[in-house]
Image (cartoon, rainbow, N blue to C red; front, side, top):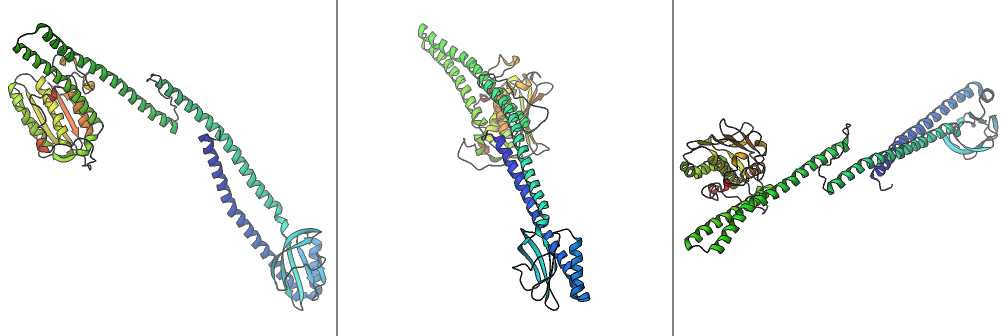
Length: 480
């Protein structure tokens, strides 16, 4: 139980409470002592001055009579009174003799003495009267001892109550924490056994543990989505690689069996190379996605004009658009300076343009825009007048290897929009798909960003002027 964090926390709070209680009681006790001490001395000095005035007015006999009356009226032990002659012999008072240890000078003293046959400490005020008479007025300090004992008893009781409450609170807190931890343990055990749908229970109170449980639940949801995504990606990779590999094996096997003429062999080898290129393209796209997702490319961010990169990408695809009779145009509103990776943005824009050219009808049009938004972010827009994407498929269009029913018969494996979405997220933005009435309007938002110092990791970005150079002719990058 000592190793319990709840008990340790409760014990810490109890100790803190005791320290705070002592810190409060110490100055209170000091103030009590000082106040009582000063009050006693002031009262005794006033009483001594009053009796000295009686001595000056009525003489020795008058003061003796005054002291005898005081002794007869007061409670025993309430006040110490003693009048002595020049030789120190008692003339009046309730002390049998002059106490020892009192200096000869007038003043206030605290001495140990016997009073009523018991040892005690007393505060005494000695006053020298005319004719070498001596007056002693004092008070037994043990008079306030019951009050002081009650103070200490009260402090000890407060410490005891605080300790008991702390121990009980520690037990209750530990029991509650163990119950919550047991729930977390059961959930984690179920997840470790493969039941990813389990979640931590939350309460309506909304305390810190509920906040932690909600955060863990969101993390578990993300983990479940990632696991399912990896599973789907693995299935999709196996499915999409099986076709080109099966075709490649079939061609090679047919060549071994039929032994055709040289020209036919070259034709089949060329088709086999195309199948291999398709497989390599899939793996290259996956590697590029993995590199983007890790954020390695942020180290190569540079300042460049996004509008210039977009214009160069459009110029690159104009010949391909003319072959299909499609009008490809670019509209810009001046320079759009951002910090980012121009090569990745050019490749992402190339994917969008390639998809638009792929689905746009003959004599259709594709418009590319680069502009600055009102909030300071940049936006790349590619709009076509093709069939578009159904509303039900838009939320899943950027998922890896996802292909809608309308795109089953076209080349590609469903990685193009995934790369665009990953590039947009790398630059602090997102990919937005909407209807163009008719066609599809793809918007890629990009935050202005700031250049970060290079760390030596990740592939360096190409300069703005070479941003479109790596894209192969015919838009192979977009075919993914």
